[in-house]
Image 1 (cartoon, rainbow, N blue to C red):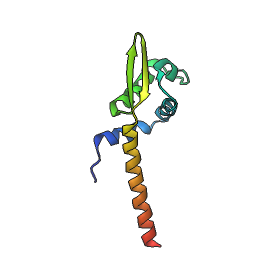
Image 2 (spheres, rainbow, N blue to C red; image 1 turned 180 degrees about the horizontal axis):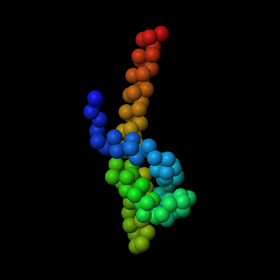
Image 3 (cartoon, rainbow, N blue to C red; image 1 turned 30 degrees about the vertical axis):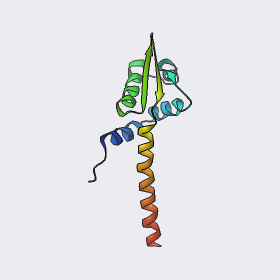
Image 4 (cartoon, rainbow, N blue to C red; image 1 turned 90 degrees about the vertical axis):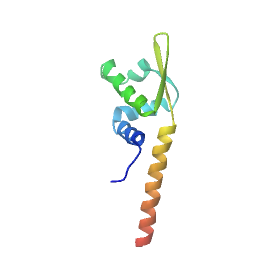
Length: 101
């Protein structure tokens, strides 16, 4: 089995969850406070905070606390690395497909 970076594995695990993908889409529009990110989801705040922890642990988001407000923003580098990996896989697939034709 090929070895992949542990961070890349964590990024794909983070993206596997639909709630986290929705949060990532929202953060794509700009930074947001945890309460704003949590608002559309019918779950307890501690449960939602675990989703944000997953993002922070894989490096996809960074947070900053000012007073009582914790604000989250995207950290795009891990997502770019995942995109590069997917592009390499796609290119390899297309190359194999062309050879067979």
